[in-house]
Amino acid sequence: MYPTFRYHALANLSAEDETALVTLGDREVSWKAGETIQREGDAVRGFYLHVGGWIHSSIVMRSGARLIQKVHLPGDMLGTPSMALDQAADTLTTITSAVTSFVPFERLRELYYRRPRLAMLFTFAVQMERLSLMDMLAVTGRASAREQLARVLLDLYTRLTPLGVVSNNAFELPLTQEVIGDLTGITAVHVNRTLRVLREEGLIEQKGHFLRILDLPQLQAIAPIRPRTPRFEPDWLPSS
Image 1 (tube, helix red, strand yellow):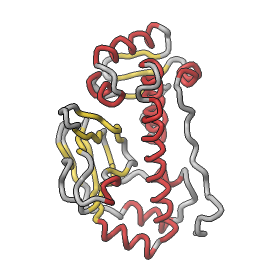
Image 2 (cartoon, helix red, strand yellow):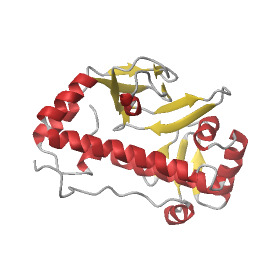
Image 3 (cartoon, helix red, strand yellow):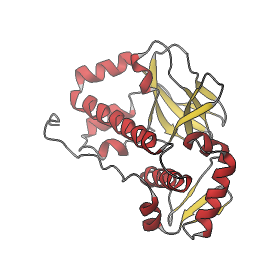
Image 4 (cartoon, one colour):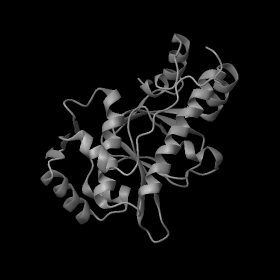
């Protein structure tokens, strides 16, 4: 079932709103790790609700280099940047086994007609995605590798916590150093070296695919961007 915690962070949801959200998409589809859900250039008919697993969105530069724009977690909406295009702007690839639910644009249109408050919350949620990309753009090429990795780890920690998969500041990190490098613009070798520095400083601990944040305040102090807190129930949001 599609997680709705990000909407609860924006406003109070009625039982009808909750039902409308979790039933917005088509039947859930399961994917294996490494599968392509959507390819850059595909015809666009809708977007996806991210139900389970880890997925990343990427584009390929003319040089052939891959740029990972974001690592997506359950509760995200996938493919929304392509709403204004005839062809998909990015490729969606599973990192782990994953589950998605497709939402045709016609169904989203009905949401705006029949449930305008919920449709506005959807718009807010998309803008939070945009803020995340703005923050990533702000630090790429302008922050040190240490600062960038601190931001990435804190972003994952913050987004995984509402899913209930963080225990004692530890969570599974199924990202290769190559993927982290493509996400940050840092070489895999530099990623490896920087993670080692963070371990030696006593900020993180790694055991296999699990990472534990040992000093959260210090990691937050290193990150170059302050966390964003969404405004709850803005005055101009329609009443429930």
